[in-house]
Image (cartoon, rainbow over all chains, first blue to last red; front, side, top):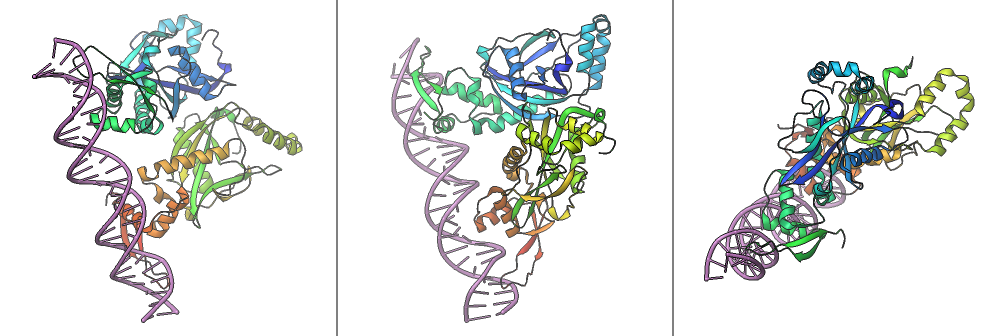
Amino acid sequence: MHAFNEQDYIQQLSIDCVIFGYQEKQLKVLVPKMNFKGDFWALPAGFIYQDENIDQAARRILEGRTGIKDIYLEQFRVFGDARRTNIQVLERLIQLNENELGDKRFDRKEFDWITRRFVSIGYYALVDISKVVPQQSELDASIGWYSIKELPTMIMDHNEMVEKALETLRLNLDQKLIAFNLLPQTFTMKELQELYEAIFDRPFARNNFQKKMLELNVLERLEKKFTGAANKAPYLYRFQPEA
Amino acid sequence: MHAFNEQDYIQQLSIDCVIFGYQEKQLKVLVPKMNFKGDFWALPAGFIYQDENIDQAARRILEGRTGIKDIYLEQFRVFGDARRTNIQVLERLIQLNENELGDKRFDRKEFDWITRRFVSIGYYALVDISKVVPQQSELDASIGWYSIKELPTMIMDHNEMVEKALETLRLNLDQKLIAFNLLPQTFTMKELQELYEAIFDRPFARNNFQKKMLELNVLERLEKKFTGAANKAPYLYRFQPEA
DNA sequence: CCAAAAGTGTTGGTATTACACCCATGT
DNA sequence: ACATGGGTGTAATACCAACACTTTTGG
């Protein structure tokens, strides 16, 4: 982001990323808090270089925030209302940060860029949360995982973006067999079920869920996992398409 | 398109429309032929005004080509490869039209705009083909309906766009009950079935299809349609949600 | 031997498909 | 009366959700 030169990018077009992770039986989203006075959150975002595919741009942005390459990601919708910006929120941001913005020319320029009308392409990503070390950018005050049930109020239409991303995720989950991107390499059937329950926000019947998953013929059963608990040890599974 | 001023639009972002119609048992797409020497086809397209929602822009473009307001339309995907342009095709276009482009400054300017790198938002639309009077723009040599089975080879990735649009249409058809947008107000069950068969490119069982459609509870049965043929007269139906 | 949780099998209902039959229409 | 195509009913099948039972584990 140093030597920020807006000519390098496509104007007025941005990418916003909804990065899903799974931890403690909750579906979470990676959200940075903006480095402005006041409490402003915004989804990880970025712009597209002139010679860059939009998918590449999304990958670059995701890698920058998570530190991982090879992330599962998918475009889910374009957000292009002329007044996507919530004016009240933006005015509050400007008001609270007037002094700082006046002082630093660099920030001012970036601020002008950011407050223009933008059309944004929404991507969602699925990551193994244990592999991610969230990367705080210069524009962030902090960055962290928030449960989809307790998301902060974000700027513009970013909360709506998360909702649409989740809708698309639910529609695609069975179709494209992508849930496994949210889990570590090996997992128990119960963990997989709890992930599904977190995503769909409803319970599944244990036996039928197991049957359904096994009949997909994409799970490889490995050794048992002895937890020390006084019950039958569950098998570990690995995602193995067409094995 | 007169007094074309590129400052009014968002730069490097366009909208391409796949306009579906249905006629003679075939699913068709409205495709203009470009007003250049050589045979170049391109989907109806346009740009987005600075103060215009992208959906509004799509509506404006659609109205311009079809003459109808209130068209069913839906965004289906963004096409953003850096090299969407098929270089060979473009070079052939330039070569064949060198003289004309050199002569007219206006065209030249527009040509430069068009040959920049563009990210394009794909919309598909469903229209009652009998209500459409295709509007030829100044940039068109002609405009017409082409069966999806006999589409001309179009510039850039426009053929791929039609494929993706059709995929999305198939996925959404039952879910969103939108097929009726392709038919006149009243239609027989057979016509509806033939439409489905054209869209999915496969036959449906007559009785089961009828049952499925009637159980949706969105069809209102009207009077019979006497065709003069020596067989039982079919009923006419009208689409009537939650009646 | 018991509690807890995992794994598997069986049943009953529902939706989908295939098959069969009857009805209206004009010649 | 009959050929043609429209409308409806029924049987067979596949699919899915609920229930029951067995197995493994450590105390």
